[in-house]
Every structure is written in C-alpha cells, then in structure tokens.
Length: 155
Image 1 (cartoon, rainbow, N blue to C red):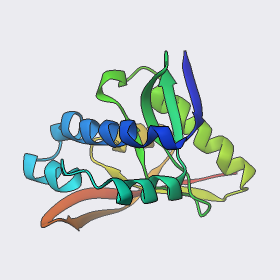
Image 2: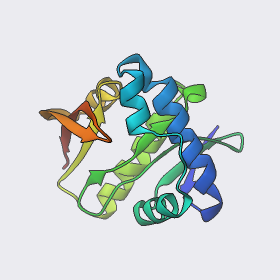
Image 3: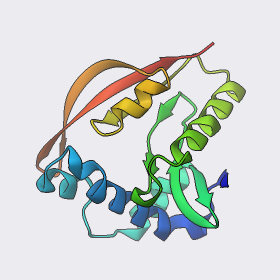
C-alpha cells in the first residue's frame, strides 16, 4: 500500500538520495552522463537542500515504510519537484503523488498547474492532461538540459 504524507525534517537525506538516484538511474535513459551529473551532482550541500525542501514542503510517498517518491505543489500551481524512485517506477507511486497534488490544488482553488518536465517524465504528465506549452533548453552547471513547460487547466 502507498501512503502519502507531508514532509518531515527526518526525510532530508533520503529525499536527496532519491532525487540523485532517480536522475542518475531513470533520467539517464534520455540525458547524457554530463547532463545528469550537472542536474544532480554527487556533492551534497545539506544546508542548501534543507532550505530548498523546507520551502517547497513536498508530499512524500512511502511503500511499506520506504520512501518511494516525493512531489510538491506551490501556491501558484507550480510543481517544482516530482520524483519517483527507480525501485518503484510504474507501481502507482506517481499516481498517488499526482492525486495529492490535485487534492491540494482543489483546496487552493487553482485554475491550472504547471511544471518544467523532463523528457523522461513527459509521457506521465501527458497522461494526466498536462499539455506542452514550450520546449526549452535550460543551462545548468555548464550543460544545456532540454525539458518542457507543461500546463494542466483545472475546473
């Protein structure tokens, strides 16, 4: 069973590890080693990560007590992070996180949701009704990383 809960400070290290592992093991099917290393460098800056994750206050999905994914929704409808562990792909974790996002969006009475989505995640977001608004190339630590701005209209 998948349990979705709010982030707690004890999740800091596991969420960093999950993000790093997902980018290096899942997104690497669509991005070069140089690109994934720029996107998710192995150097861990705990204070910066604590500040970032505390600010976005993500939902955390657990399967049998193991963190399987995390995602957030900001008050303006922006989804900043959406990661599902390589070990839990295609097992409903992303679906459970998206449902948590939709529930929060309804409480916030948002008109739309948007995200900057990787090539890897684009089919998943499309399945939920997100539509590509723009293909873009983002400079990250000396690499150009291609992704898509996608939006879903609500209501």
